[in-house]
Image 1 (cartoon, each protein chain N blue to C red):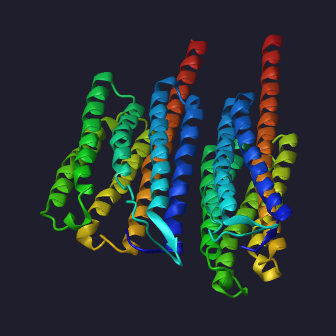
Image 2 (image 1 turned 135 degrees about the vertical axis):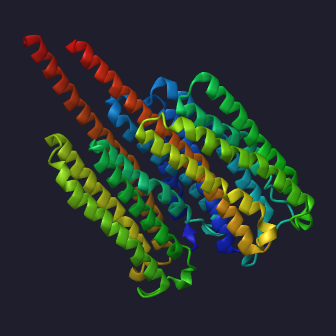
Image 3 (image 1 turned 60 degrees about the vertical axis):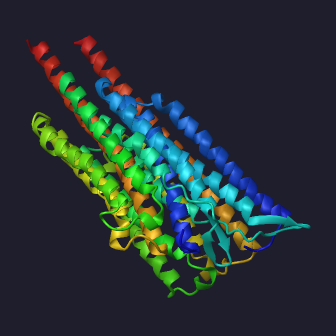
Length: 267
Length: 267
């Protein structure tokens, strides 16, 4: 762990604390706002709650590990010798990333057979994406060199399911999106872009050692702060977009019921 | 950190503890009282619950940091050397202040397009107001001098979105307020005044170093106690006013439904 100034250490520390607050507040939100959407979309909000609840727990652990990995010596924070357990992130993602795929498919309200097939394929691909990155992440720092090292190989293997997920989201889901109400279609396009933008950060952080982001205080702060922003956007922000989709679909449902009732009265 | 007498230290300690109790009690209240208002206003109470929940978490951390920053030596509390993490306040405000704007706009029950535009503008302005104050706050104490220092500049930049928020609340929201029932109009005027009165304390605390409030035991106690009172009023008190507005609107709604039903019966 590189030596950090007090403000560098505090920035990471405060961002971890901010993430804990965001995750637990989002958990409360999804639980409390569940009944604001039609019954068939509630399961999607429940899954959103699980994702941020799991991440909130892991960030408590990451926060604690960060505190233990450093000690204040004079005017600087230096490594205490206790390793910073960055691998918590992979344990978190192993659970949460497949669930993010599940909540997205559930909120679309597709035909059962299509829905089940999409959930199975997307969540298995998400699981493989994380599981194949982990053996690379836990290699010692000195082994994280060169594209053609073991580190590069695990990164490459992990990219295959990532590309598959993008293919399913853009090509397969793209087809079913035309059947959604216009407002929902727009929201689904946005959530797909959010997924690409936030998930895009993780491979960049993984490739850090290749692009001169491997060591040094600046790189450490950049990667940790980047992870927190990506996690908040990809879990809390993503969940709020799922809620908005569920709300838009609930309103569309209520409108069509109201129209039906008026027609019945007039008939 | 200045040396404090036992009663000075205890006053701050007890005020922090009081704030934790207020925040969590308010959280319970907003969750439990949610169904006392019409469904369309519940989301506003949910957001109120998130605000005090997030603040309750941060006050737990501030409380702990206060305890670690001091140690009892003889008859006085002296700095232990562990820095008091006042920046938690900024992390808290970064989340809660935009949400305070969201709950206010939501409870007004405006047309969707007006509502979304107000939420976007007010919450971005609130976020900028806090984010621009943070770099000033984390400057070392000796740099917090003179209006024309970097400290003064961050304070000034942070004031721009603050003034914008006041403009939107008084000018833009003022126009839509005429369409609200008279009782609700009065409550909305009060909540706007509460916002101005409580938010007004934060810039005063920030300007402390310019007005002789920068150091010394009295200044430290004044600022910390002032923050807790401002936070309780601006979050718990504000949330209770939101609840009262939601109740008044629920009653107005029930009355108009009752009138409609009576008319149907008479027809």
